[in-house]
Length: 200
Image 1 (cartoon, rainbow, N blue to C red):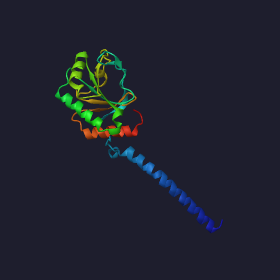
Image 2: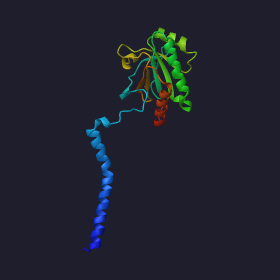
Image 3: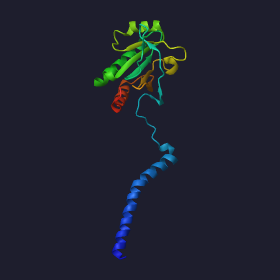
């Protein structure tokens, strides 16, 4: 083989090795960093609410309207669920109003989100309707008619009685919002989810 052919062959091999290195070195470096330097892993999260991982399918809750008719609500739309108490006090009203404003801020996507207020019994549902229905048009106010162990409070377990639970249109519980809610950040969560998802 003549010298020029040897040089050309050597250059071809060098080019091939360089291309292989450019392709494989980043993967190898990432594996080494991930495996041997756990403190370097990103810990930030992009969602504002507390993520439920893995997402939990909501069981078939027995939710009834004021006439006792069962409703199948937690499907087909994004849902912000609030578990009401015996009465809806000033803190409850403030929380419910905040979520109404957040929903309105969704603009063209507001019809993709429903607000659901679940009362623990018939008397609490009647009180919630009396207190909230006028100023909260479109909010679903229902009573939890399930037996013990099969109620919304048995599934959505939070130390915060003022929590909101986000359920996706497939009926999966994804996020919980507790404490002093930042409306801008909750709105960002909803916009991002709706942008990434074609369902609901």
